[in-house]
Length: 188
Image (cartoon, rainbow, N blue to C red; front, side):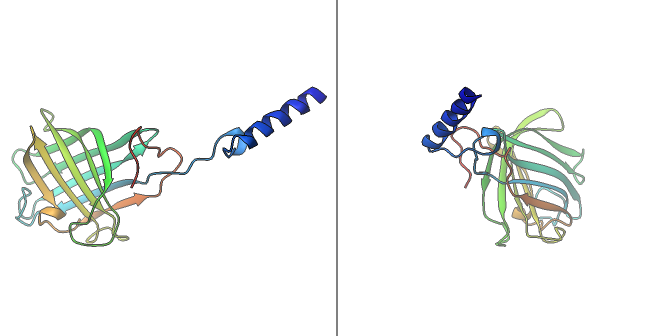
């Protein structure tokens, strides 16, 4: 028993001398570095973007970092194009702070990634979202820009004259223990 107590004391002394804080059960305490965003709803075209005036653009989006990698999803459907245009996100490649397109003060995030248009054409996307509080309808912002081979092929939403979202909500969430960034990436 004495050897066990001496051994535990030695381990505790080493942890104390290492200068690294030990949390419960001997795990290190880590600062939560990043927030993340989720949202869904629809925008209505006003005739200034690729979304036809009066047409709905439905979206579901999420982004951030999780367990050392970028994380997220994107689904976007333009109900005004013929045939129906769908943009399906296939990966998230970036997540960063940005500025609101309407000059509001809510937290704004850009999510970038790869996608497919109508399940056939490979593309990349940038989505910009702003959480302007509750309720989200008529306040929060959503914009999408889709590129093929570096050229813009589609853009719609707040940044392109369609105004704030008409229905739904954008929510920027506080980070948690799983929101650790990829190697070499720091949260702003």
